[in-house]
Image (cartoon, rainbow over all chains, first blue to last red; front, side):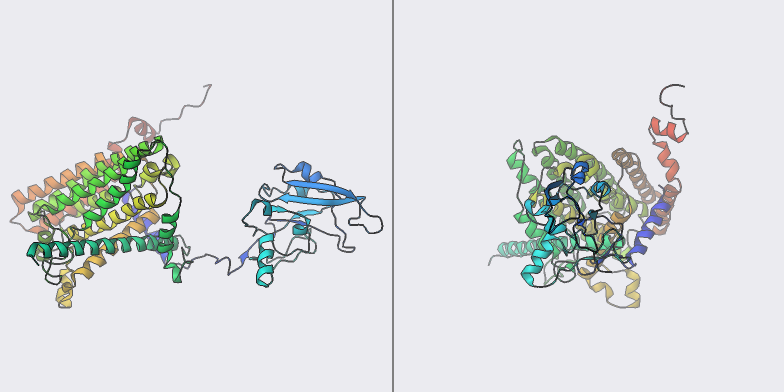
Length: 179
Length: 388
């Protein structure tokens, strides 16, 4: 490293000092995500009937490398079915602290019920609050658990801190993210 | 009130003032450094606490005071607690000798806390006491990483202290005094010493970076090898005290550089011709010069990568030290034979020496390569693993 090289390097850093920062002021400004970004799981529904796609087969739980998924299936009520199959997921839980967002559950799912969405704002205080149930992941749910808790307390709507300019992926049927 | 009591009270007051000024500067240095580093990396930096992040130092202080203070069971509690205090104490004491103006210019008193005839020597001695803080901190932690880190850090600091001491030797010979005030007044009469001691200044600059453990010589906190070196086992306010010592040392080093080489509290002589009375703002000039050097410290941190330890030691012992000796020799030769010619000869010699060093930097380095590095430089083929 010669002295001239040092001088050159110093020139580069000095030049950057006068450039405009590229920082996104995240909570105030929305972060821009790519549609392929994989975040919190979404349990999708059939678009026409509104029935849950999950048939409680536990393949996602079986394939999960971190043992983060727990599924308990139950028989469908024939008159008032929850899912179009014989059975449905009575309990569907994912421990978000164990989940590594690898997407294997999404791959393994025969009905395309569990899909990784773009939601990532899940910071919370207690361990037990990171175990997300069906009520936290079904398609119409907006925001994560802490965000909804915050919204309930302040009376304001949930505000997602990110935007997906090209919209969600097609398999995320019915999911709306700010554009 | 007896005279000695008044003197004592005034000195105490000045000491408190200097400590307060230094600690405030330290606090805001951390913020300025983080903001500047961020901007040099095209980021924004801390801007959440208070307007523009101005309360960030306060938040940091509150956090480090109330953080849980952990220590190792085997730690020597007394020394372990005293070490950061020694480090910060020496750093704070060293600054007191820097003159912020000509004698009797501060309401009829001298604008410094203490002034010894052996000013520079005393200051070098004081800053070297900071090594005790670092080494004792590493030793008393009762754990192996810190003691290794402490050894490394003290070896580094001692090595560069020698270079630092030797590089000011030429300057002291030239001025014929070690008192800061005499030094500044000499510069006011003859021009800044940077002109006549470019080589000495370059060495001094490098040595002060190493002495204050700043990038590219921040090996004490080389986290990829040491997990923070001598302060591995420190937490909360004790850790903050070590950091504070580093920053205060940085401010002191800047002040020393400004005083020794850049005319101290005096403004540039040529400006006096353009705007009369401009060198009459001693403290402001000193602050401006210190600020410049502090910016340099941050700027270098944003640019240069950290040196490897053997590179650092080789650089200190095999380059800084001999070149500083050569600089001393050159100044002595000038004083013996060239005094009649004028100071410009020394300026020329010094500059020529620096340029020669720069021009030969690659070859000079090659001279001191280890056998392995020499073989690598000669393009020796790496023996393939197994087989032929």
